[in-house]
Image (cartoon, rainbow, N blue to C red; front, side):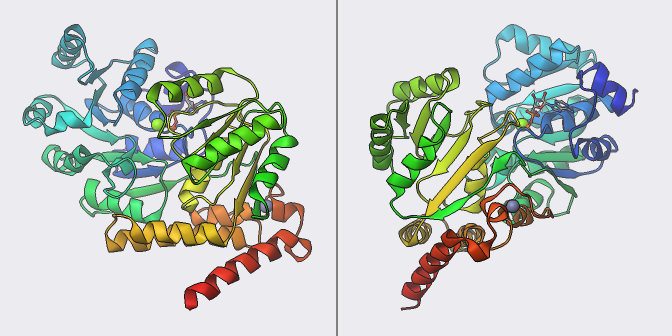
Length: 420
Ligand code: ADP
Ligand code: MG
Ligand code: ZN
């Protein structure tokens, strides 16, 4: 058995761990129950792949997307690691090869699609092989009220109990409710060791402004960033089309994107955005999953996002390459009212609604803060930080910052109407 550092360079070809990885790798390799929360791109896969090589037996990996599993298995095999997947996307030969590797005790990582757990035979099959650890990727899929809920994830808890092996869960969703649901459903309520890491994206400039002619404000923001790739998020489908049109009239290369468009038209926009330099996509939140363009230079919110989580995810699409990126989030009293109504009139049960109000309020707190935005944002995610020097409030302290006054006025107007 080799040490973590040797495997890191020999197998994965990296010279050092990313922030947080080493502690997680050590805890998982030692066989402790672990919940690791790291932002997208933080390097979560390594935190179960590497320990799997340090441990005897097979690590079963549960992951929600067949495409992701296949990519990981391919990359591992190219690195000389015995890995296989059992999914509905397999050819017969692929499945046979996985069984052969399992029978000869060669396989280190076995990826399984969650729907396989629903088949009665899965447990019997897993009992026959030497499973020593379960890794759950995208663990927030067990959260019933989240966007990515996968009913089959609810079976993972039973699987852990039946196999009686340690479990390591990974997600980029950091809010307290989701964390509690993961602990409850995957770990049977017995708290695992929790790692929360690296939510700071220091290259992204953070800024909020009260709405005061949103179309003009977005055009101004985009106007001083001509030729750069950017995303404008809007609250409604209709707005995306109008704003894309206005941007084109102002000489930008811009198009719109929303969930009401034909799959084919959406795919065209996704491909153009990935390939072209300097395209602006004006979109609803439907534009997100799978956008992994590294050089998005800016993200603007023409309307207030629905929660602090959504805000973080959406601005987080900018500057993946580490180079400076800018964001601007606009909001006004109507946005706040609309978001509140959406929560109240949504289908979620009462306890969920109050959590959603909490997430919206946390975003309002961020909009209203007079302290460094990043400090406020990171403290929501449980991380401490000092003033960042890369947000509107660090640029211009609150005493002299009119926008903050405007924001406070907008907020107190809403609070007053609510009291009536
Ligand atoms: P996540 O699942 O947290 O979104 P991934 O596991 O997909 O992140 O990793 C994101 C990228 O970072 C991958 O390209 C991966 O190869 C790379 N990566 C992971 N760990 C390291 C490291 N220690 N050094 C350099 N690159 C790394
Ligand atoms: Mg991942
Ligand atoms: Zn700051």
